[in-house]
Every structure is written in structure tokens, then in C-alpha cells.
Length: 338
Image (tube, rainbow, N blue to C red):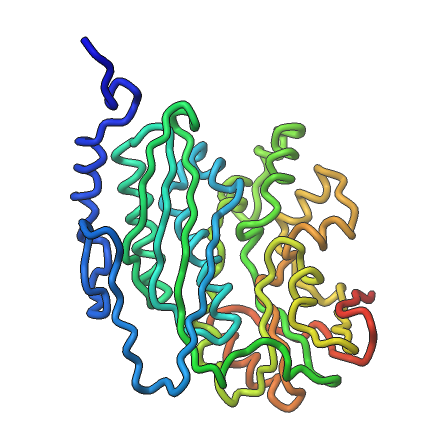
């Protein structure tokens, strides 16, 4: 009997059946999504008469090595919220409204329960961020990836009026720097966290405020869009930075104009206890903690001094928000003090 694609590890009938079952999750309830599964590409209506000079805001993202832990510890749907929330945060900090997300799932074998859970999680995360999952790709690659290994990525499109882009260019000396709380690692620093878990497995026995170490470690990335969308126009915000890989310095420096320095009082950061455990077990130097992790600030807002108090009140309806520094004249874009 001859060789077949199924014998090579790819069962087209099985994958087609999975796609058919998840079709209802694609573009659910969004009248701008003009087609579903089946066509070669997704169609999305971008008629926005209220936007004078529309600009698309595009971003791709993946949840890093946290996805390995998600499969290992059973956080399949949760990791999708990580990925989508990270993705939408990246376009929201530019002042954009998220529209649509496309996903890619690459795996060594198409497990029906896992793939349905992944697409369900992504669809729900999109709905939480007021956008739609409009399509994507599931690629089965036996021999490239082992059984039970999944690699996820996604791409988002948002929209904004060209005149309303928030890019930090309006930041001035005297502006306040505000931290918006994270709930933990979000999606960055997991390669280091996994190394600590491998070398010091006793950390798995720790509890944090009634949660196991793994429960605290796997909390999904916070979704900031709803908390900041009301600040996109005439609020006094001059810049937003999503704090991901590179920490506060690596990300806030991307929006600070030349000749200015955001002076951050490190002692004011309210750092979740999981970071202290990782530092303790891994003997991680302070500088490396600040470069690797968000250390409690998942988002940073820069605001006019007179507007800072109102912005804190607004964001605090969703997440704790507080002042951690000031923008001053200087050549180093971000500097930690105390």
C-alpha cells in the first residue's frame, strides 16, 4: 500500500472537521466581518466616516515561552488571553481602537480538544477587548514539532485618526510618570522563570496570597484597552508605554523624546510578591530584575502635571494607578533613583 498524507502525520479530514466546528467563533456578532471560514482570506469593512484621516495600526505578537508552561500545566484557554491582551495593549498605547485579530496555530499533531480550546480562548479574549477574531491558520507539521507542542502567534489591526496618534512626541519636562499595575509577569521573563523552576523545583511548593506558585505565575496578561480608551483625546496624556520585554527602561525609552529623561523612583513601584520569590530563588540582581520583568508596572502613562490626578482616578476604576516619577531635562531617557 502506498504512502499517504495521513501516514505522514497530517489527517486533512480531521483538521477540516475541527475548522468546521469552530466556525461559529469567527467574527461572532461583528457586522464588519463580511465572511467566515472557507474563503482564502478574511474580509473586513473599514468604512469609518467619523474618522477624517484613517490610519491602520498593525501588530503581530506571540506569548513567548509561557505557552510551553500553558500546555504543561493546563492553561490552554488562558494563554490565548495572554497573547491577545499583549497584542491589543501594543496598539492601544498608540491611541488605536482594535478591530480584528488573525491567529496562527502551528502544532505537531492536531488535537481536537486543544485546538478548539485555543480558538475559544482567542475568540473570548478578542470580545473582551472589543474586537473580533476574523480568521487564521492551523498548520500541522509532524517531524518539525513534537506531539503536544504548539506554537501560537497572532496579528491585530486597529484604526486611528492620523491627528490622534499617541507616540510620545508631546511629552515635556515636568510631565508626571504614572504606573498602572500588573498582576504578575504577564508574558515576559518566562525563560528565566522556567530556568529557576528547573534548578530550584522547591519554588513550586510556595504559596502566594493563597495561590500556588503556578497559579500566580500563569495569571493572564492584563488587558488595558478598556481602562485607557477614554483617555485617547484631550485628557492630558502625552504618552503610553506597554511594559514588556526590556522592563520599564527598555519600553518607556521608546516614547521619551531626545533631551528628556523620565526619572523613576524605584522605591515607589508596588511589586507583586511573585517577583520577590523569583529574585530570592534565582539570586537575580536588581538591574536584571528591572530589565527582565515589568516589576509591577504593566503600563506606564505620561501626563501633564495638572491632568495626572484625574487620569489616576480614571484608570483606577480598572487597575491601581499611581505616580512613580517625573520627566526632566537630561540625556538618559529613563533613569531609576532610590
